[in-house]
Structures are given as structure tokens and as C-alpha cells.
Amino acid sequence: MLPKELHKFFWEHNPAELEEKTYWYFTIERLLEHGNDQAIRWVFKHYPQEKIIEVIKSSRSISRKTANFWKNFFHLREEEIFCLTKSSHQPGINFLDETGKLVRDEILGV
Image (cartoon, rainbow, N blue to C red; front, side, top):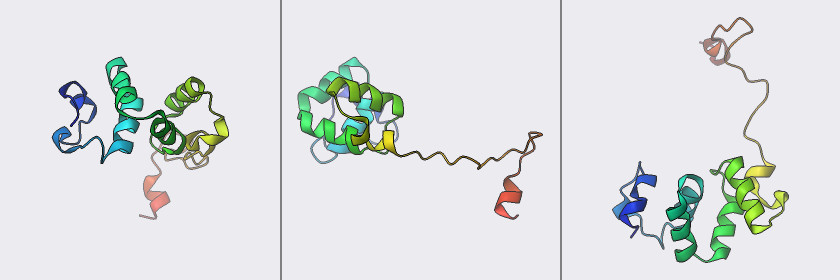
């Protein structure tokens, strides 16, 4: 069970239902991205470094900023980290025209 001090980082879940061994990936991912110093220390105390690195390398949810921090911390290569090699941004998809008018309906064909 997660300590009470960490419950605030799992705002959309009931922390009492998040078993740290069952939901290890989600727990590590969330705390690396949103956790404070206490949360990060807890992660390193409760999970092996291999699992932490696995999350950093394969997560689709951590930000580029977080990924870069942990890349440097663990001396990882950028190409090993999924969120640093793939971009979800699709240039050219704008929902405002050049005058600032919303063009959502035109895009959706409504």
C-alpha cells in the first residue's frame, strides 16, 4: 500500500486500491513525473533500479523534460527512451485559421 504522503499524486484513483507490486509501472511513472523529493526517495527505496529504468525507457506518459532529467541521471542514450524518439505532435493540424477563427467544424465536416 502506498504511504499516505503519496496519495496526492494519484488524484484520479483510490490510493488504497493501488498495490505497489501490482501497479508498479504506473506508480513509478506517476511519481517520476509528478512526485516531490520524498516521492522519488520512496520509489528508489521500493523498486529496483532496473524497473525504474524500464519505465523511463518505455513510458508514453512522462514528459520530455522528465525523460531528459532521468536520461542524464542514469546516463542513458536518447534513442533508448521512447518519449524522446517519437513525437505525438502532428504539424499542420490547426484548429484556428490565420484570423483566429475556430475551424473545428470545418475539419470535422460538420
